[in-house]
Length: 53
Image (cartoon, rainbow, N blue to C red; front, side, top):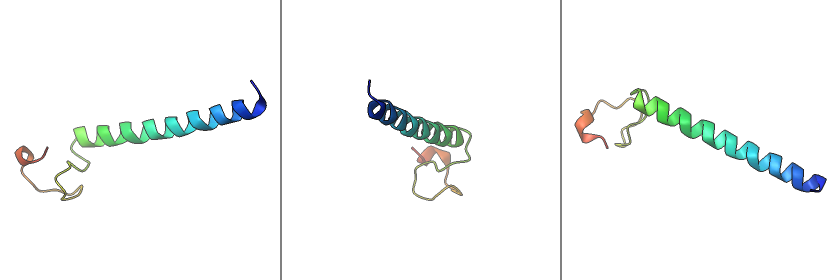
């Protein structure tokens, strides 16, 4: 492998790692009830949970 291929691989793996951390953080916040439930009201939703997806 050339140096540029190694650098490209490292950059891509870094981007994937950051995206994975972001997604996991959102999933954990949502499952704990501290994140947006997806109903469109935002994270301070006062909707009944049975209406939320």
